[in-house]
Length: 482
Ligand code: TYD
Ligand code: MG
Image 1: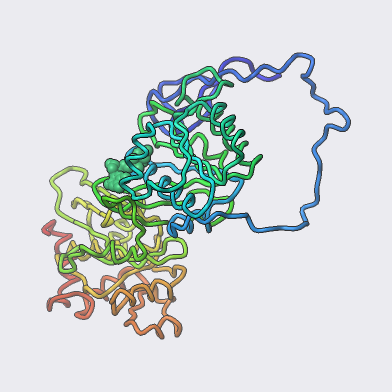
Image 2: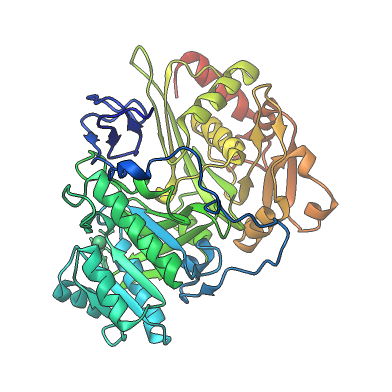
């Protein structure tokens, strides 16, 4: 017998519980749990546990014809690639991000581009009045795009309006938190409304073959229900992220039923909207000060695309009982691991040092391949000696101190070469004929102590005090002197 009584959901992470609590046990946020609206009661006569004859689901064999998902390319290459080659007809895509990051700008640019290419596009603006959308379109230089606006928040009204005009190719809902449906009594922005409105729009997409893009604000305090609540319902989830103080914006796929999830799209916010960044490495290395200790260039991969980024480390003696460990753009646990390995296998005692690590440009990287570059940056900062300016690093470090091979070595090396780097420090097992052919000077390392020994060689650091490098690092660590 199903349990009666209300159930509750967290507005930030969507976790459903049977009891109300002050703090969500899944995401740890306070005051974010709210009661879910009751589900529509099932009429007494209809309740049945045994299926009626003839009412069973239609079973079909797995083997059969397959076809590629029908796509609409927006013409914004960075967006298309992250979505897996364009928006898929009959599917729903969620574009999440913090308020002010540029979601509306991105979707309006894509919508205008498609409308100009002859597609029928409807922009449902629940957040902004028509005048505001027009102002933005003017700023983006797309005021003449034949785009239909619907300043409306009531789902049924939107859909009946669309019904009269025929289904569009693309519907944009900005934002899902402003929509409300008659089916539920709670106000817009609550868990029940956001879910129900999203469900209705998704059903509409499946029925009509229109592509639906739902914009969702990421909320931190749980005042309104966040996009996490609808992640499981939609076909694709893209998050638009970036540091508001930087111009770069990164579009990252976290779920995609029709494509890869490790792709990123890089944009730059300009006075006239978002512009695509075709060569992000150039952008992320643009302001690099290669002569500073603690800076190492990581040859990374984001999905199918190589990306060079600068890793900055600052290691300084601490006066605190438990020294600070601050990380921006990388996993704090991985930093702890690299520090532990440096301590255990290389004799670099950092327990009395503050350690700060930053990925330049506001980028967030997830690859374990960054371990080696992080270690190099830490050692360089500790020894107060800059690394060679023309060298890139990549490789995964294991707890035993060995350096493990990572995927796509040739792509990483090619990107480094393209941007003018002439040498690379990489896992020894990745040094083969194919990678040697690329013309970079390769320095393979098997273990982390190997790295400390190697980067003290004169060709790997800038300046003439190469031989003292490792010793200096060890001495600074022991004495607590930078
Ligand atoms: P917006 O797309 O409104 O963000 P969101 O929908 O995610 O809340 O963009 C907000 C910011 O972008 C705003 O601070 C202004 C800035 N912006 C530009 O710098 N250039 C532009 O051309 C536009 C349209 C916005
Ligand atoms: Mg907006």
